[in-house]
Length: 265
Image (cartoon, rainbow, N blue to C red; front, side, top):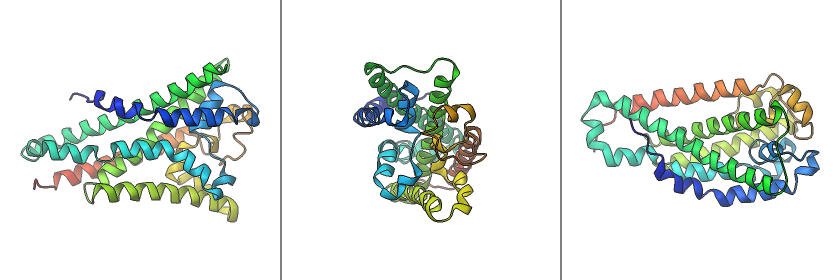
């Protein structure tokens, strides 16, 4: 099973303007949150969304820009592969499962590559401006945790779009996922503004899993209190990682089932 990652490198690099925008945008805001570290810049760029500002919509759009771009790049990855390799896939029933796993693994690697490029470029902007990571474990813990959650969340969305495209047109699957993402973020803002007694439900919404500053993060949250002003009780990064892995596995199992019952046409 060979991974075809190099063809996607051009797509990953096409996200550099977004990384530049996020880096500069949050670099101008970073000191207003009381910190000036490299992990702080990455945290604001990819793991931060003020829940009280969701009603203004614009912060939501800024937060999901990389997601929109990445999912657009990979929205038809599996369906295109079926079109080009359909005869091979559908004449070898026993190979369908291995073929699906291969495409899924490639999708995950492409998502990780995309965000590695994003994080690296934003970090370079921060370094040029004189930022450096905190000493000790805090800086690396924030960067690593945010990178893992962002990759898992966006892999989930990419998988949802691609496997959804096995039942409907790719365009429909793409826009359904994007609108669902936006709706659930707005729903989180609605709960915060109008029904605080149900605030715990935010913990179970897919987009919440990638917003690190909504998590209960112990001493690290204490160090970055301005960013972690709103947190959901008992909402740990480990919970989010398990949530996203399980949800993605369910999608993969369904996708394999769907592929087995498809015929070439």
